[in-house]
Length: 322
Ligand code: AVJ
Image 1: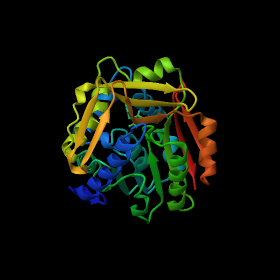
Image 2: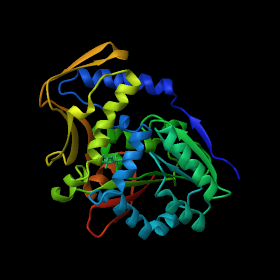
Image 3: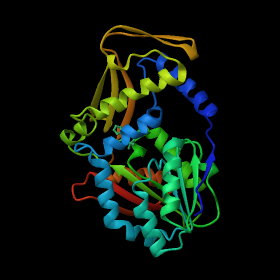
């Protein structure tokens, strides 16, 4: 058996530098905020996997069912030799794509990228064992700044699934899509999975489940700061909040201080005060309209490709060509 190889473009040092910079900026801002990528240490990745199995969290199973339905069409259209998957995580949906691409085309290599080396190593090894003959080449990086490190040679399809594009604000999305467009060669494709605007009565519980798993996931970012930056957050004193921002069409997750607190972040030499009721933003998860996504892709230079949606119009897969 050929083992998967793993390229580390993001070392523990790089991660710490980025975390220090993000935490300094976010914790000294008004209002305070933290970027969602810091949810995903080993524990956070595991909590996210649990979220995907919750009855309220429809995106993963909706996208999966949609992908099952249309994966052969995607494979026929893409004819990819290399599948690059941004934010691969546990690579749960990847098997569908890999099976279809290798049955209906010239697939040679799978390149999963993720910020979490723990999740990625396990996923890459499993895929390598399941698909003998497929080259598996993992890349540990931040999806927003490592497009330049992607392998060349062989027609590529870049898959960015799960709706993670929604973690970016519109300006960040424009930049990110333009950069993907810039690294693609003519004939190569982007496969984008995006959550669609739907009923807030469906959306909000997906981010505020009855079992409290999302709350634990949200508070995990505080455990990450405690462990990595020697902070002394008391995570249980922060309440999980999920709100639908109807104007900007995104879910916003926040942590609300349940009392006045002073938090020390030893590694940053920083003291941070929280007032009772103060809210800190930890994630946005934007939802889209198909027309809006098309426009954003066109603005980044992509040719309009195929769009597939589930029967309830809650999720879209879009294949856009260079
Ligand atoms: C992994 C970014 C797609 O926004 O739905 C799940 C993360 N946050 N529950 C999402 C998440 C709260 C998820 N993404």
